[in-house]
Amino acid sequence: MPSCILAIDQGTTSSRAILFGKDYEVRGSAQREFTQHFPRSGWVEHDAEEIWDSVVATCREAMEKAGVTAADIAGIGITNQRETVVIWDRRTGKPIHRAIVWQDRRTADACAALKQKGHEAEVTAKTGLLLDPYFSASKIAWTLDNVAGARAAAEAGDLAFGTIDSFLIWRLTQGRAHVTDATNAARTLLFDIHRGQWDEEMLALFQVPASLLPEVKDSAADFGDAAADILGGTIRILGVAGDQQAATVGQACFQPGMLKSTYGTGCFVVMNTGSQSVISRNRLLTTIAYQLDGKRTYALEGSIFVAGAAVQWLRDGLGVIEQASETAALADAADENQDVYLVPAFTGLGAPYWNAKARGALFGLTRGTTPKELARAALESVCYQTRDLVQAMQGDWGQKDKGAGGDTVLRVDGGMVASDWTMQFLADILNAPVDRPVVLETTALGAAYLAGLKAGFYPEPAKFAERWKLDRRFDPDMDEATRARKFAGWKRAVTATLLAAEE
Image (tube, rainbow, N blue to C red; front, side, top):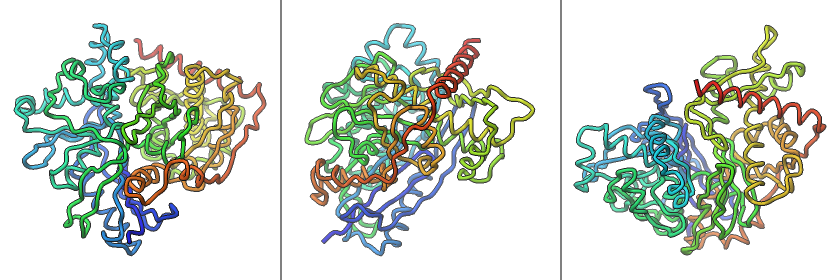
């Protein structure tokens, strides 16, 4: 009998494979980073072949560590960095260009032109999204128009488009399945989230041939079989969700009003709104949280482009730290009398500002500013941005705002939540409890759960939710005057950053 589920967690900076047992315990895992390419300012690319190699290598390593074979695995769940675009040749399976990453801003002018022509209201009504280079459609069009012969090949039906999940499934099934799930389709600007299908008007607007597109399935469905020669035996692919939706599932946020925030390269806050697709008044996104048995569950989402990436910048860009784990101790030792603010708009500002031209800025520097204050500013910036999103969601959801947090309890996951200092500051600036679960690998767990649900390996959502366990609750412990002063300083810093972007 199968004893585990294999989760493939293909992220922005690394690929991971994790094997989960019947009791959701981790039985084996492996991780591998891959190269980030920055050909020009604001451009971000990945080598899809390198991603594929990293996925296969981590799956094999995790299986070896756990001492399992393909016969022991009930199914594969895939979660992935969303919006990132891969276009490949259907005959060879080879990408025609590097993957254009969700962070990439090269199509900002194209999106602005469509917005100026008055198309954004129509786009938002159908897709729940904004006209922004963050999403896939304009990246697809750019690739077709900038790779020699690509548009003609696409119109002839020779090319396939996919977000990373689709590309991995194509490779795992050796070209037998060109599919995606509803959560990934919902991030392309080409999918009508209300009708649950690709939209002809959106395809025409972005000049994307329909022949490029994958079939859209439930998040727990039969996506095809991984070929035997890849992982030592045939394994069914049974679960797929974009990373933030997978984390929502992994955090068991199945009830309307439940809220989770994931802190990885970026930060993503998601609120379950049930069967209701809430249209935001605060430039948040309306999206699909998950789709099971043909039924769509919707969510409000706020996307922050830079969270953990700010810490990476301290390490790799400035060289003021050697390891990300150093930042909490530095922040704790920082001078309380210095109010240093980092607005980490390295690739623009996401929700609720949505300014593709904004660039990062530091405020409040003095001769006494040291790496300690920079570390604190980087960690605090993530928390300030989270408060921006939570307040916006409260307004859209109709909650009365009681300070910052209202009645919200925020469930958190991702690499940064291991920092007690950061989580305490988050609770303080939100004025709301922050709950950190025992299982921090919630994105991978969500993908595994979806696959396990389809395989009959895991129980229905309500039973899964009962197994969610709290590691620690962080309660707010900051006086209101300090909270108000610090957040007002952040808002002034953002305002100055946005003004600079207009010049």
